[in-house]
Amino acid sequence: MDALYLIKIGEITLKDGNQAEFVARLKRDIKRRLRGIPSVLESKEARYYLSVPTEYEEYAEFALSRTPGVNGWAKARRCAKDMATIRALAIELMREKAAEGPRSFKVEARRSDKSFALGSYDIARELGGAVLEALPELRVDVHAPEALLYVEIREQAYVYTDGRKGVRGLPVGSGGTGLLMLSGGIDSPVAGYRMIGRGLALESLYFHSYPYTSQEAWDKVRDLALILASFQGGMTMHTASFTELQLKIRKDAPEDRATLYLRACMVMAADMLAKKRGLNCVVSGESLGQVASQTAENMRFTGSYTDLAILRPLAGTDKEDTVRTARQIGSFELSILPYEDCCVLFSPKHPVLKARYESEKAAFDALGFRDIVAASVDAIESVELDYPGPKGLPRAPRR
Ligand code: ATP
Ligand code: MG
Image 1: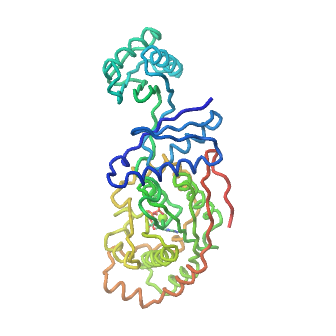
Image 2 (image 1 turned 60 degrees about the vertical axis):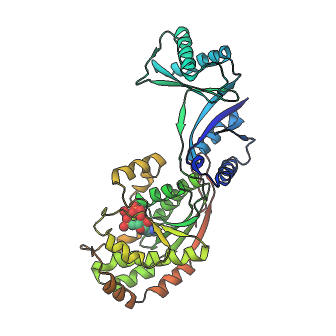
Image 3 (image 1 turned 90 degrees about the horizontal axis):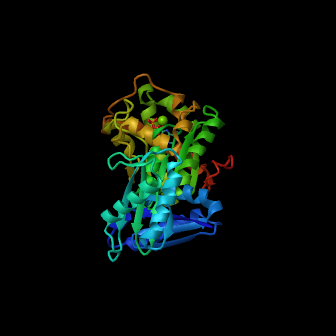
């Protein structure tokens, strides 16, 4: 037997002119994630329907929960459009649901087929009554139900009890391409997730400073990239060595400028790599004021080392919200592992807070970091991270 999934798309439906292109992209993406699995994906009206053999349910649910452009999904049952059949199915599904514990419920009916004899209010009332009769331990609660029974009357009838949320947003790649500056912290994986959800296809760039930073630190960033790969459907991860550069900064730059100049060099490297790879923008996890050095003045200074747009989706996000998203996508537990990031090689006690643009650029440029940055970009090592699938994150290749 096959499991049937009803898929809701959201923002795509607002696209007037090029909706077909968004839809095609989304379908391709879902099919790609289910490669090797005999699946059928159809679209009818504003819904998609995916069916897979039941032994592959886990794969389908993993994919639907992580594909940008999918607003929500539900494992549904399909039946003929007559009330007797729908009633029997509704009772069967609510009986299964009640076994999980809920004691109150509400029916949500939607009638897209306007030729169907009953309106949505009448459908809900009739099914609610039938369920109450069959399962007297339940009661109806329209304000705070513990369970929901959904019925949709379309070309056929669809009945389900568990509606699940998707990533929402737009299909991967519909917003172009970008380079994510991915560290081992809490913010940048969330920044990447946000932009993937807006349709950007991302590659990631990590700066390490071996031996001052460890193999474990790299493994951790790779695992974070794998989480992003599960949403994006794969990801190329680049690693640049900044050891030599950091030592030069420590030797030549004023102590209170060390972090600021390192950030400028990171942007410079990101710019070079993005252009080599033909990527359209840079994404960073900076958040205004989160650490004292993340000021608009400092972002202006560091941002001046690329002419690409730097997208900072967390610029206006509260840390609590970022942490909530990190927990939800599963990156939080990894991010708080204690392996050191490259910036701890020097942590100025009193970092400069508001770089003065002209003078700071002159001072930075005079130190001549560009050649070392270019050399580290030339020596970048890259790994292709496959879409990981639901069976936990596989051990991807080590460098
Ligand atoms: P995160 O939690 O993402 O590390 P953060 O709040 O710790 O962010 P910073 O360490 O100041 O902030 O870094 C700001 C941004 O610069 C990061 O979000 C990330 O985009 C980028 N960045 C910092 N360190 C690295 C690194 N080692 N490799 C790649 N990008 C980095
Ligand atoms: Mg950090």
